Amino acid sequence: MPIKKAALKRTRSDRGRGARNSSVLNELKTLSKKFETLLSAKEKEKAKTLLKEVSVRLQKAVSRGIIHKNRASRKIGRLSRKLAKLLTA
Image (tube, rainbow, N blue to C red; front, side, top):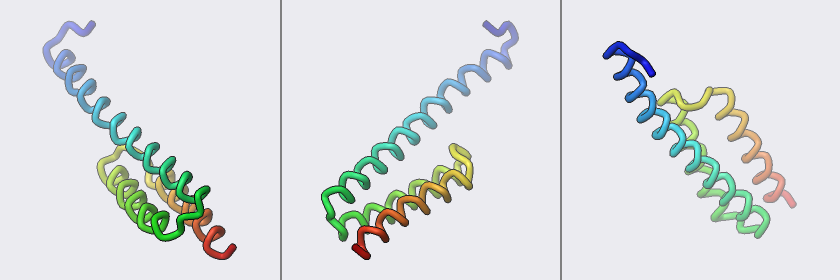
């Protein structure tokens, strides 16, 4: 345990920030899984709209500093490629 007051405050704020970050990451995982299930069910229109929402949420997480911008870009690219593959098939 930290002894100084500043260190105690830092651990408190880190705990709160960590909880917020983990909730955002869980939300992103859930949205990605929903997108994957829509792709497997071949629901193209719903998947398109959900891809827009997922990309917005990923960009928001990048702007908040929760995930790295390259990770978000890679995730969006992979999901877009899967949707394009479904649309051409």
